[in-house]
Length: 536
Image (cartoon, rainbow, N blue to C red):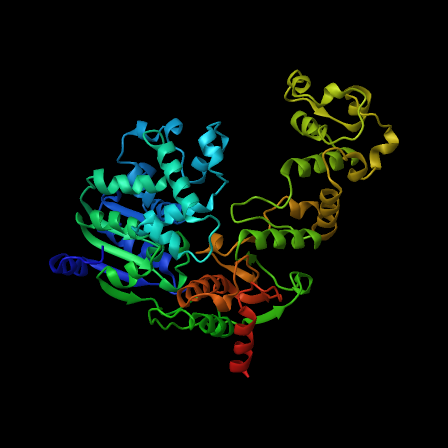
């Protein structure tokens, strides 16, 4: 892949611009406002422009901004604004991707699990099976799966079991199913990509050697190529991504964005201490803003001053297990939060039931649907038929209910004296004590009106918020590594530095470090001590 002919290298270098965008320097802004809109102003039709990014969110952002600026186009005109997988998919026959014949990634594994095929059961498949993850990584790296397996520092299976699982997986999906990696492999062999005026590739550091094979094929028919990324934020090496394809292997003229608008001096200094540990980082100095910022370390979640710091929050864990711990701690503290996909910290139907009872007890009416939902949680009923959907289907959709009407007619085994009873005395069915206590804490802390709004706290992994930012960021250093940081190779340490560099540079105003004495911690506490020494 890296052994390009001299003539092709010259051709690529002539038509390619590589944009290095350190955190907060406006990489996305540059791609959309200065590159994409430049060609639209020149009269280039959107159908002659491909905008490829690593995430659907980035693609949607670029398309929506372009549509807002150029209303003469519609969404169909931006048909080549896609993730790489979706871009490849559109060139195959639709029947290939019929849902019955296409189970992608872990969904395929779930399908395998549910099958009654004894051969699969004997092979011990698990959801998100580790062996299949290694196999997929090898395919993305264009390497022999056996070789990649032997290089893994943590092995859940012996080699024989690993190879048996791979063979079983390949046999199962042969001629029946395809996964995401199949999609890319087929595109390399089968797709004749169209001629284009411009190709814009965002988050270039996150693509794998296999995906770069597709990109090399695409650019043959492209007049102008723009690649944008930051190798220091290349945090998908676990899946085979190689930032060197962006930094070194793909020729082009280089531009570095040198002014971050996200954070001030203190967060910048701390991030650079982490960045020093990325041994193969491309040199790209950039300037921080003049805004105030501060950094503090804590040993306990309850010490973090969530109420004192205004604005949005990211509470970030390295792995899913640490995110689970963070969510539990947040609930115990009565924090209202969501994950980066928008899933709130409480069940929406439970919250609707609480609001419905509150409205009733205050003399207000509720709708049929609200009443039906509330009845799933009421402790005592005269007639259990009122819990069934069949009953409520026979009620007019526009029917409104008062508390008295429900007591007299619908089957609440209550008296009017119960009207002022708190919701937790009435709604006990399908509520665990922990859920009840959490809602009580939330209502005391925020009030009902605030809980109807979107939360300003996001709790998720560092990987999930890459590309985003928040006023305040909390980083939890606990991991589930099978070995301490000191026992990792130079490359493994460098990869972890990239993850934590990405995490801390999400912060605009304040950065908070939650560091415990857990033996598998990333040593961010040592980074903090170094920061204090250098700041003295």
